Image (cartoon, rainbow, N blue to C red):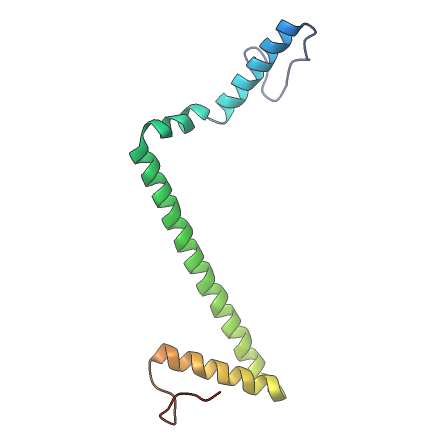
Length: 118
């Protein structure tokens, strides 16, 4: 708003016309603050809108892939630590799970030649 320091607002006016003008002035100030003109300009250039959305989607996808990879690595690390504690039933279950994961990552068939049983 012209003549008003940043962060401060004028007191609300008392007449209807002054109230409408005050509200329009406030809306104009907010639109300038959020760069509504740049946002609306995107809709006039569909190619730019497409590429910006495409790149945003690629960035989200890469972020999700990296995040899930790190989360999976942390889970496997925690499972390995649980096996080291040598818990009776849980340790053998986790050891079997880690063996399956390692054979899938290595691409070698499991020992015994056949598919693992139920």
